[in-house]
Image (cartoon, rainbow, N blue to C red; front, side, top):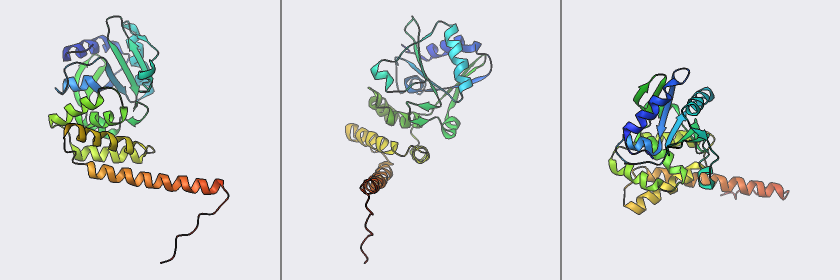
Length: 235
């Protein structure tokens, strides 16, 4: 359990023995503690951007008493690259670029992350509230909507940056996630009475995706039946 920034600093100090300089990005509840939007988190969510960085941090975790564990049914849905636990109750969920099998820690997200602490070869950067909100809109984990509400209520979201990030990520081979994001933020606004400034654009993107998807499914159905799709009527 992490209930103070000093707990994160202590963990970074322990990880300082990684073999070469490594940037580690914090998302999730740990990042919200830094941003003042949350008081406590049950685990530390870390993202690295290369396999080499992942292996270095995983090795350092093993050296300070963490053991890799098999995810339970709920955690498995998050698709972490590795889950590490220690007898003192601290858990680290580590991801290699892609978070929860869905969105990536993009160049834009990395540029918005704020350097928070350095210890030895470990350099901790905390992702922006804007990008944490984007991540939480596709995770579907218990408590994520409440965390998202705290982010929106803090007034720290750059909605233009959020929309640009969502457009870029869903255009890069993962277009289906626009439906998850739109549904999540719509539900957030409905539940808490928040105005989501980019809601109209998100719903339009989701509707456009669904129309294309339906057209593709119809085309495949006709193809399987050995039929040609009739041409649209001439006006």
